[in-house]
Length: 458
Image (cartoon, rainbow, N blue to C red):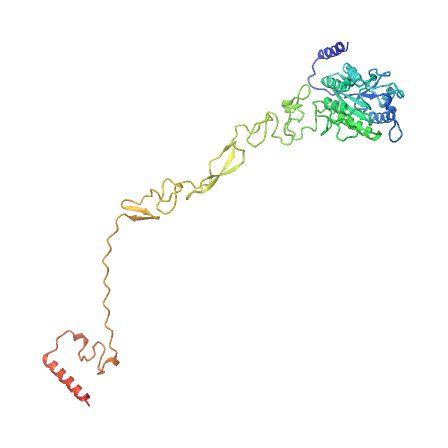
């Protein structure tokens, strides 16, 4: 019977004409409230959990009633372990009307917690299955999945119902109230619903532990805070391809770089994608307007077109620089720049010469100095200098000039008659020293010498 009803609902929606684009419809919110007998347990301030739930629900409903369509479901209904029933149909209701739907407090005993059966009712509840509306169920419970007698095999059945609702487009928000909840089941349910809190631990089983995936509240203030957080998620613009806040814009605030693509995948170059969001239109970098699905892929280290790969076919990144050339011999380094994914020519470098010169340098930069350096015929390059193969004939040395005769010191002349240009004892001019002395002159000279010697004798 349940399956047949579900198929009927799905077929009815399949027959509806497809909308050209998502249109604004107020979110539909159904509060599903636990009315088991344990809700009469008192809190630290002396109030019961039922009273705290009524107060928090009234406050939150008052804040969102103008922007959503609300309804109410209580469980069990009417009592014991009967599945919950929608007591206020989803529509333009007020907080006051929701309070009326809560009815009287639960009995002190006999009301159990048929959580899974209650969620199962909603899989065929048409008002929250309409495809044009964003539908939410806010589950508030203080216990375990429990009917009498208790069957341990049913412990995690609420998780399966949450998964079913999610597959039908309904988002379930889980709130655990008090220390008697089944934290492990509620954690798993939040994960299955896609509403798990960031960084949570789904394996936690103690209500008092930190980091639950669902919203845990232990008093009125915490319950109020949890419900307000969920209400904000529902009524504020979400990244889902719909105009959640009915301001005429879809996913505003989710295209930070204003390139026409959102991180939600709901726009294709500024055009709204029909039917919500599509992963192929997700902007993979919403801080760079040059990065979006379909953009030209350039060699810059980024996945410009959001296809999952960066710089395909690029050997370098645009603007990157590197040294080029050689430092061997007379060569020196230059630089290359990456342009359009390829290295430019090497600029500023000194390259090798075609041949080496005979100068003690390695001009062709092969690590050898002056090899094959040409010096012309008959010469060889030696230590950077062209040397002839055969030694040249030495030139005749120029004879040194004969020394001039030193002039006679008059003190060395025993006769004291030396004159410049004449030797000692010479009475002739140096100019005529080369002529032979006549015989008579020789005789006179001898006589003079003898006379001089006689005079000096004692």
